[in-house]
Length: 223
Image 1 (cartoon, rainbow, N blue to C red):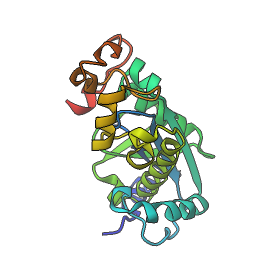
Image 2: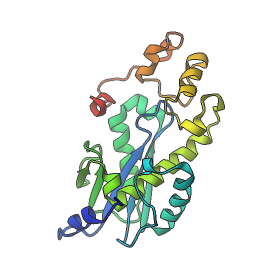
Image 3: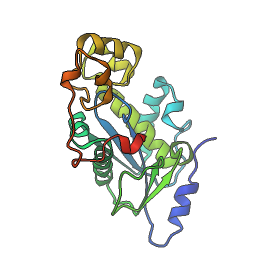
Image 4: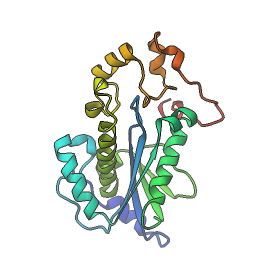
């Protein structure tokens, strides 16, 4: 089923809510590169044809659709947290910072946020409605999922690292990525606090250990 405006309309029925943003992220499970968050505000008009969760779209379809969405949306904001921030702060705090950067980049401040998933990594002062599979249910979240995916994939393709296949796997642990990582070790773009290094004896000495007070870490999201 195509995403609808049902959730947006439910929130807009509240007297205090005039603008709703849909928020989604990409890159959470990658071993390299940033995490990217996109926030989208719409005017409730009919979205471009074929809009759905980005994971249901081929790369050939995602690119043209993202171009349509960028011109159609009433507002688009992007935020990123680098691999260094992820290593230092943990994924929960990195996501929070990226999401806030995306929301603050919007041309208008939303009164409510629809966030894909079941973990509120944004927090106060943003009023957040969590929606599992929101990227399939909500038009604004679906648009955010496509735009975030296309933006991050394009960024990863610019990093080079051809031996690791970043242009195809976007830093996720594909077989080529894993084989090259074991052979050549991590690049300057890899997340060095992640547990994959525990399985690479030759490169284990490079692992970074975060200060537990610096952030909640990825266990908070995957536990």
